[in-house]
Image (cartoon, rainbow, N blue to C red; front, side, top):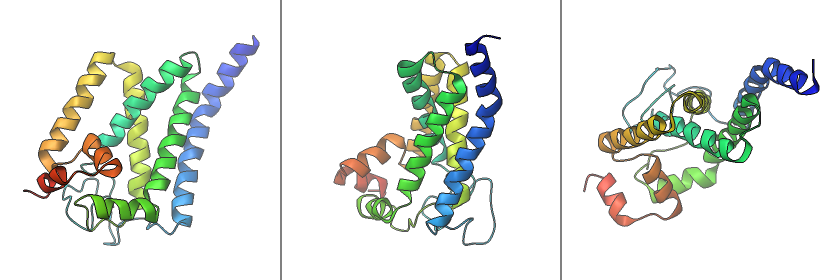
Length: 194
């Protein structure tokens, strides 16, 4: 067995273990930061669709889950561009680290307060750990899907998710980024129903 074959074998064998370890480390860090493990309501739902509620971002999935799937599409494309020859498991683990870093940063007082000041999310107090871990897994699903789908299908799916979520809740990944970086009063008014 050649050196490259051995590396590929070990990465294929240990890749899933490393990926699971990354997700576990994210959960442990979030718990150490004082994040709630599950919704303060005391139960876990697979889907919570009411954005303007204290249970938003507290359950397994919600209207922001498609954003994390799109993150996976983006990370797959990025790592295809910069490391096309890198093993899939390595690229996925790097994407998990980046997504996990975002989930940790997103749950700092700085970002929580930014959401509350710049967006219509006045009742946002951060994600539960189960929601953050589910967001990371949604990114991994998007990453895997992008590795299997034609590029044009991935782009159409991303646009369709953005449009669906935008119409359904007047928010989506693009609007979320805009409102975090450069809040616009017109968008905030529209999101508030004005």
